[in-house]
Image: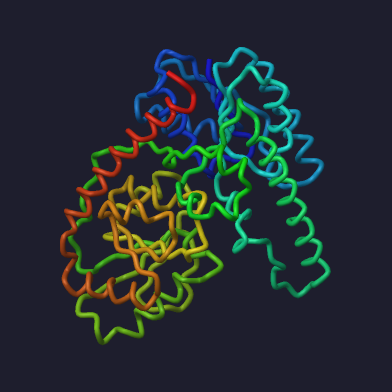
Length: 390
């Protein structure tokens, strides 16, 4: 039996990646019973994804009462109760995978790995891992109420210290494997404690890829899609690019439009807001099918030790992407899946060139993306087997 545990993410957070992990573990160990532990709303979403991909055999879903995210005593206590409930069913597990490691559950996961030293664990970390790098140290947010801002800063600093202490402790345990979704950590060796650096295993972000995607319908405008998470990023690069593009209107020879999913567009020209408040997976898929390219302009300090979910949504949709200097995109760019520049000015120039030349080599980009899908799936199967054994 294999246990896969999600105690911190709800139905609209990481559901595709969690389903992808279940699917990929099943593909490597088809004869093992797999139990996926999660709260009820996510269970329905994950089950639907698995059913759509005809993944039924030997997979069970076990419901936990609710998920906890905030780093506070009440949430930590609630998380502890969930793990006690779960571990009673996992005493004979071949191995256990914790899908989302956060401050709210890391201390408990640490103590469980120590106690159950006869079981192999895989501990997956998403975006929170970025905070251990010096350039991403917690800062005081600009708020009117300085006292509340200081309290929030102290709370976040305490949470990060607690996270790092437990993470480094876990990294030294022989039955624990720390799993990241990027291999860029190798360039930041001086910023990562040695036990953690030596323990890290890398997977591509788990995803159930399909290969039936169609080209966008020919239309009169070049459509550039933006997901809400990219639009809402604190660096505001999406807004800067939209405004800079509009300033270059006399250079653009073909109509274009920015299509933004579930985020207010403001007063910028050449933008359309697509509102789908439920944030259903089918809404994301439909949105991307309408776009020619996607824009994901994260700064170079974003997504170093983890990976962008939007990137993998684009790869699944077979839509090429315009990106800035974030390291998480290097592999896909090298594989010929998009265009990357390190400055907004340079990136906009490439975007305008692509528009004016009516999207040259578009099918080549799509072929490259399909090839990358197959390679990443193969890499994950091989790496999972290496981590947890044949």
